[in-house]
Amino acid sequence: MTTTSADLETPSASRLGPRRWAVLALVGLVGQIAWTVENMYLNVFVYDTITDDPAVLAAMVAASAASATIATLVVGAWSDRLGRRRVFVAGGYVLWGLSTAAFGLVTVEGHAGAASVAGAVTLAVLTVIVLDCLMSMLGSGANDAAFNAWVTDVTDTTNRGRVEAVLAALPLLSMLLVFGVLDGLTRAGEWRTFFLTIGIAIVIVGVVAWFLMRDASTPQRQSDGVWRAIAYGLRPSTIRANPALYLTFAAWAVFGISTQVFLPYLIIYLQRTLRIDGYALVLGVVLLGASVVSIVGGRVIDRVGKVRSIMPALAIYLIGLVLMAFVRDITWVIIAGLAMMSGFMLVVAAVGAASRDATPRDRAGSVQGLRMIFAILIPMVIGPFIGAAIISGAGETYAELGVVKQVPTAGIFIGAAVVAVLVVVPTIALLRRERRAQGQPPQTPQEPQQTTEAGQE
Image (cartoon, rainbow, N blue to C red; front, side, top):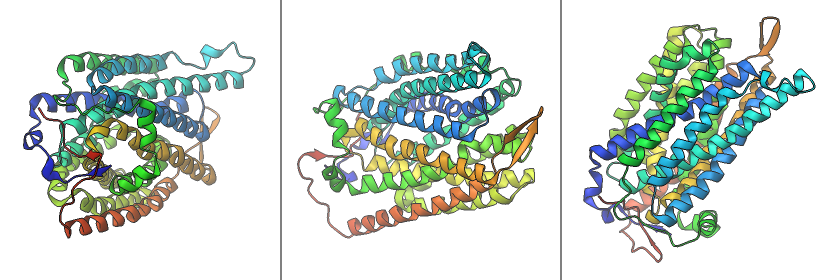
């Protein structure tokens, strides 16, 4: 599998048009709102209503990551074989919304028939984990596999930096919307209304996507069967044939581990450790500012180069993490958070765009499954447990209504910074490959020919 140069791309592919931008914005944003609930608020829901054990939170994150990865591998390969993405996006969003709304039905009291309080808590935890795995499978099939493959289909090397910057900003905008509009429901304990509202929004967007979204007019169908396509990306021969793609994924895996050391515990840290009552305002300012930086930075990434942009973005992220470990005043928390989240989004935009450039055209769906392994599964299996170990090792607690609970410590940001430094290793390898490629004439691709050409209008 050999990736050709951008010269082989269709010029018209760089003009996305208002319909495609609308799909990118609407489907992408609501999908990220759902992931905000799953990645951040679900942890708070469990912490507030079921158990404060950080190991339970870490186990839930790991289980959902594994489920999401399996779904992305299967749906990505399946959509490649059919050459269609819309049906998976629209149908998947509807089911995703229904499963999200179902979290509002889970309570410890609902398992009161258990032999003991501990038994009721255990059953509630298991119910949440199973439901989280189901929701993650539906969401990942629709969003991570089908929607992301569609993005690769309709973009090219001339616009992927801009598109990835917008997509990278959407998680921040989604957090801003959830914090600003719905956080009051969670603080009041109205979890059922919270989950129902999010679920209905996802269902509505699934219906809208069916009418608004269009598959690429010249889809690249993959003749391999689903399971053969899944195995294809894991073969050593495929890795050797596509070193740039897998080096990019390696950088993404390390960076993802870093973010997952602190991200699952971030809201709890602001609430319980720093005792910032107006944490929603703090997050709102940080996320809005970081979103602007990410969107503006997308054009810079396209001009400077995706791989060349990783190191500067990583430096900003590291500065933010170190500051977050030491600041306590609300003003400095905002400043540190801006640096941390801006660097976070710029790294994701640069790495994500670089991975799309290195994606073979007829494997766009299958590659999303690989992306899930490196960007989601590995980080979410390893990162939260590092964070949990740091929290448990510090042993910091607070008392609420006579109950002593563990709280996250500033050490999670230092741990995240230590891991993030390792991103330098695959990035240097990518830079060296890029320099060597610039000094050599373009090579004729070998069979089977695979290109990064985007889907045409």
